[in-house]
Length: 119
Image (cartoon, rainbow, N blue to C red; front, side, top):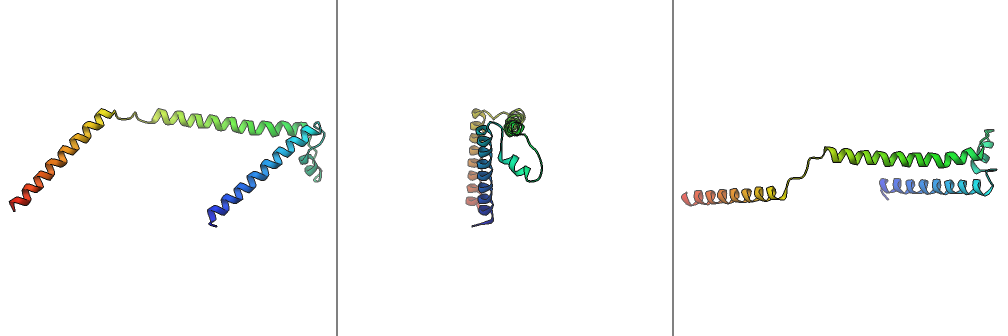
C-alpha cells in the first residue's frame, strides 16, 4: 500500500467514525428528549456542563452553515470563471484556419520537392 493509499484509508476511517458518532449523538439527544447526550457525558468527566438542547442546535446549525457557505463559494467560483473566460472561437473561423494551414503545408511540401529535384 502506497503512502497516498494509506492516507486515503485513514481519511475514510476517520470520516466514517465522525459520521457514526454524529448520527449517534443526534439519535441519543432526540431519544432522551434533550436530557442526555454522549458529549455531555464526556465533557462531564472534565466537569464541563453542556445543555443537550444547545448542543443539538450546534450539531445542526454548524454543518448547515458550512454547507451553505460551501455552495455559495462554489457558485461564486463558477460565476467568476464564466465571467472571465473568453468566448469560444466560432467553428467557421476554425475551419478557415485549418484550410489555410493545410494550403501552406502543401505549398511548403511542393517547394521542398522542387528544391530536391533541382539538386
